[in-house]
Length: 190
Image (cartoon, rainbow, N blue to C red):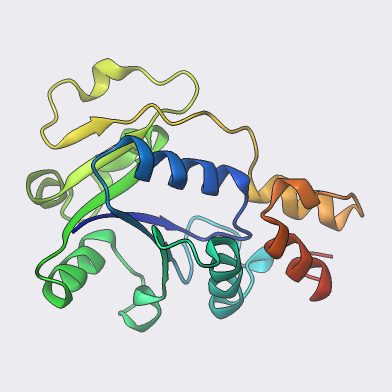
C-alpha cells in the first residue's frame, strides 16, 4: 500500500489541509494519506498550540469515516524533538509492507538541507511536493525521488483561523463542519 505522510500541527485542521490531502490521494499514486499530528514544532508559538490529543481529535473529526485518510499520533510517543526521518524509520519498521512518501509544501524545500538526515530522506523515500505561490520548479530538477503534485493553492492558514476566532469572527466555513462545531463547543482559541 502506498501511503502519504502529511505532517503538521493542525492547529486547527482546515479546508486547505483537507483540499491538499484529497488532491494528493486522487491525483498521485497514493492509496491512503495519514495525517501525522506533531506534538510541537519548535519553530511555532506553543502559547497558541492546543494540546496534541485535542488536535488529534480535530483531525479525527475532519476525516470522519473517509477510508482514504487516517489520523496518527505516532510522534506522541517518540523522543522529542521529533524528526521526520525518525518517524519514517519507525513507521517503516512497524509497517514493512507499506511504501511511505513524505508530503511537503514547496516552502519546505528551501530549508530541506537542514533537516536531520535529509540525504536519507531523498534516497529512501518519495517526496511529494505541493507548490506554494512563487515556487521555482528549477530548484528540484536535480533531486531524485521528488515529485511535484499540482495541488491547488489555498490562502487559508491555521494562524488566520486562530486570530479570527480570538477577534470573535465567524470562520466556520474555513474548517470542516465537525471541526468548526467542536472548536466552538470547546471555546478553543477564544
